[in-house]
Length: 194
Image (tube, rainbow, N blue to C red; front, side, top):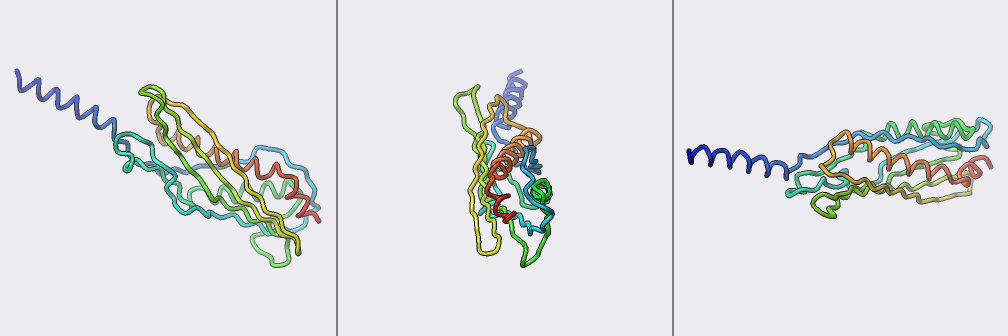
């Protein structure tokens, strides 16, 4: 009888400990631009370049007892094609024709410089994820240049550790919010149209 009790206790203890160790996640966020822009161009070609300038592909950890093994990774190949497509679409909405290259064209360069995820425990039943995204923008038209930095932050509360689908949604949201902030800046279209 004692043996069965010990085996049962070991099974319960294993279940509790495994709940504290979270597996790593590899996300594939999809940033989207849903805002409005003013069409100021008349079809002029604009060279559009989008890049990932982060120093690490790991954006944070899900927390738990073994945070070093519960990392969250966002590789550039998982989101850059979508970010490029969205940026090209916004440039078209502004009245320009996006091009992958062209020396004499006005140029728009968008870089993701920061993307972070921080799991914060406010108590045993109160936890939250804080996500941050920062874009750097450079616009060139002839000898004129314009630089901007645009940051977005979101905070999401949760009880149980978020799964990959939920974290994908949250990272997509913070990347999208940052993109809205970039293209709310009227100076971009003005300089491209000069």
